[in-house]
Image 1 (cartoon, rainbow, N blue to C red):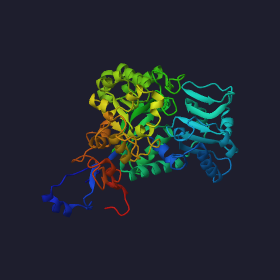
Image 2: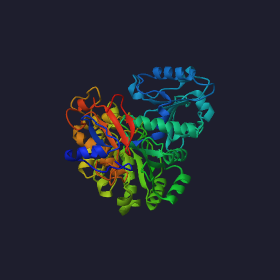
Image 3: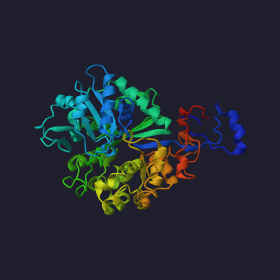
Image 4: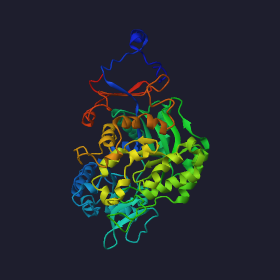
Length: 509
């Protein structure tokens, strides 16, 4: 390796000569070396923040959430906001959204803001509602919902655009905090074997810090930026400057992230027909058609890749319609993406490939959602969900990721979910709608070669060959061989980015 690139793939007969000429020799002792894994859809700074906030993942009840928050609040200076993430009411005995009463009684003296696991809903206490001035007469914002009790008072649950009523008041982190979070996130991802992340919605402030780290050669892994599509000042500046790739390839700025709808778990995903378990709702159209079309046209003209979050079938159809109309023949140049594509009606499956749209999917969403998704969608429509094989068979290019910190980024879990469509406990026996599963080899490609294509990197990343980036993910076994239960036991031994160690396991080669 030289200059962060692979110089040669050496035959056994030439091994001794290369050993003599190499500056360093690492014997991997029979480990399995892959092209560097890429997290195809995640939230870089949000992961760093989540690593510092109250972890509410895996809570078995609302009472457990309250106790974790109460304990965290005791450790904070007076007046400091309590932030947490990861709760999911679908995991609790009572699966309805909670009321803030118990939370407000436990922490009455400071605002508490707790993000749901999908990132599309907040649970806040009375102090936070008071700071934001949210009451019975507060109007719901377009694309959002304020949950209310029988008397019309806010319950503390805010969905999609309604979250902005609170989030705009949270004291912003300093650049030093942002830098710390970026490094925490990068180190965490590197420990899982990732050499790059596609960052789905980079804000102006976060981009400034990431750029500074890249300029100082201090980014732990590569970052492919999708700009925050809600910030016109940011878009104007970046579109005028044009797509950029750092000379060492550690940072790319050439995509923009937009939202067509919310999330299925909080019933914000936009469906063509009402929810089976909430007939009065079809979800939320988070961004208007006019706004989406305007940004898509501007991005395409500037040669930026448009990436639209679309989960419900109505949102997916809207995104496809807009790409067909506003990107057209330029699709080969900008490679438009639909992020998540969780519910795709049969008539839309073939449209992805025909229009030239990449489906950026997250296998662990399938295994996390399967206990309750059938209730949301109903018996007939659930067959439209998480249909990776159908899309692939129709000629669609896929990109695999986790949506971290919504899900655990661990690629072993992603491969497991893609191949088995079962939860870790083995349920359901035989897998859920196995006609849509991927093979283990395809799942590995989904984290390597497929994700390289989704970021315009197929000419220099995603494969192990001369002139390509010296990005390697080293496992102690082959993830594409043997029973799925075996690759869950796999261990990341080493993560190498541009020829340098980003992670070395304790006791590893």
